[in-house]
Structures are given as structure tokens and as C-alpha cells.
Image 1 (tube, rainbow, N blue to C red):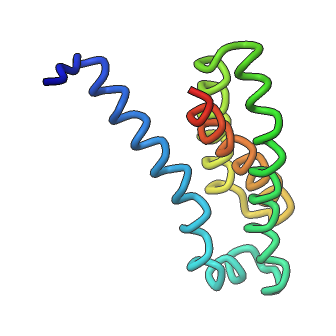
Image 2: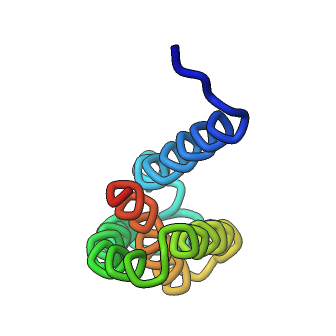
Length: 122
């Protein structure tokens, strides 16, 4: 029988919620594209950049997050990634400028890669 401490249970809950939030961030944007075209006043072909640039940030950051977690430790890199993800998510919510929105989405993709890479390295 496996006995888990309260700390272990909290860690499992935290990691599960983290992955749900990070995996859902890309999926939640696609159905909202028509509303974003209206809200950001941009053509439909430009709105697709939101997803493309997010994936670009996700892919590029994955190459950097692994070596950083080896050099500085898993926890500090994970904390910085999650704080960056939170800040970029709030920025996406509050901005009405399309170019600034794209910057926040790239940052969001970069930060979403951190727990994916760090979690796989553990």
C-alpha cells in the first residue's frame, strides 16, 4: 500500500492543474477566432497568426528551458515559467492592440513550454 503525504497530494493537484491550463491555452483560442476578428479589428487571415506564433514560441522555448533547468534547477525555472505564463495571459486579456496581443501570445507559448520540458526532465 502506498501512503502519500499531504505535500505529495498537493503536488499532484498542482501539476495536474498546471498541465490542464497549459494544454488548454491553445485550444481555447481557436473557437474564439470570429470574435477576435471583431474585437481586435483585424482581417481573418491575420488572426491565424495568434496560433502560429504561439506554437513558434512553444517550440523555441523548449530548446532553452531544458538547459536552463539543468543549470539553475527545476523549481526556479518552473516558477519563472508559470509566472511568465500568468503575466502573458493577463496581458492577452487586457490588450486591445493586435500587435501587442501577438507579443503576449509568443510569450505565452514560450512560458507554456517550460513546465512541459521541465516535467519531462524529472
